[in-house]
Image (cartoon, rainbow, N blue to C red; front, top):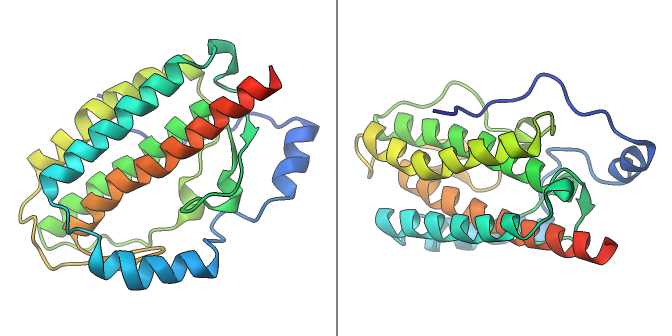
Length: 214
């Protein structure tokens, strides 16, 4: 089974790519203040983890169904083409210039990390590192076809892996999310599905950008 991790070598950037990236904020810069406040003081206490474990699983599956539909509509030769998408809620500025393949790579990196966090917290264990959005950016080193195949495996299995490895879903043990703060296993489980929907919106914007450039 595929176990996503960081690639050691990134794809060389063209001069236009480098110029666009230079104009974006640095990885890990976070979200605008208004979004950060909404996440901390509304979504964290009133939304995160409230929908229920099975609802999270259903939402994750729904998001991935839409992701695969969108990927299928993109020409194979365009899957590794970067597209600068408009600013959107929940998306760091540095993440706005990715290809479809890079987006899937990111979802795997983050998803596998969340799988491990949820399992640990459900057993009362706090991971011994700091979650950092700057460290989960894709590099686009793998071929698009390889990335898509790996993502299909990830999407089909990560929630099953979480269910198999989890102990107490209602454990009060917490681990800090970079934007929300202290999160329980149930709250991390919720954000795994939400994170997928955020990047579904980005993927659709990438697809529209590719169409406009054709």
